[in-house]
Length: 252
Image 1 (cartoon, helix red, strand yellow):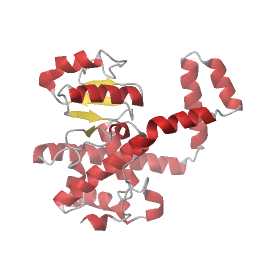
Image 2 (image 1 turned 90 degrees about the vertical axis):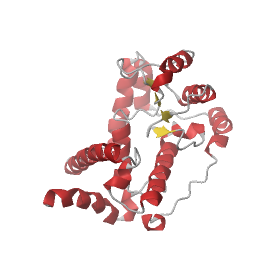
Image 3 (image 1 turned 180 degrees about the horizontal axis):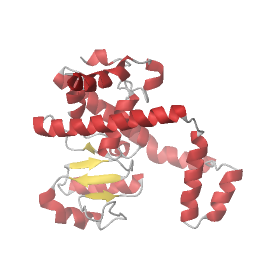
Image 4 (image 1 turned 180 degrees about the vertical axis):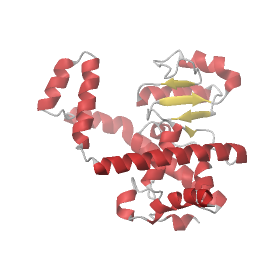
């Protein structure tokens, strides 16, 4: 009996914690649960992934993606490509959809385009992808009229056998994230320093030692012209209204 109740308690506990510290990007779903979905969908946390679910048209999928820069995160899995950057990912996705391959999972949260056709750029942007995924979860709450592991697993599927399998993955990853959070609190570390070190190591790996060395001294900033360019090319792609209620009760 205890084993059956424990997952439910574990699931509800973040919902009962302080609202000010467990929510992100205006999403009413606790951040740890959104991170659980992200880890389950995309364990490498790569925002530039495109997966086709249209196995019957795999050859056509491969023919289209060959026209663009890409790589395979797993050489044994030809269903998933790394499209490398936001603009390239959008071009490939539009080409696939225009060619009749629309059953594709996109971005950091691997949101299915057929089921949730959001603005294309938002799939491959961390913040807007997060908000899109939040909308998906909220839509499932409206369907199930409940707030439990089954509802969260509906992010993947409402079909019982698929839902159960995904639910177990969610619980496992949730426990893993809780453990990591506990370790972080017990061993506090400056995350900015860690992030900077990772970036520098990446640049060193790419033989950009001088750039990495300079970053230690002077942080780079976008020039005015770069900022203007970014605004011109991206401002129209994030026009969706993402104002969401702070409480999940509004969706039950």
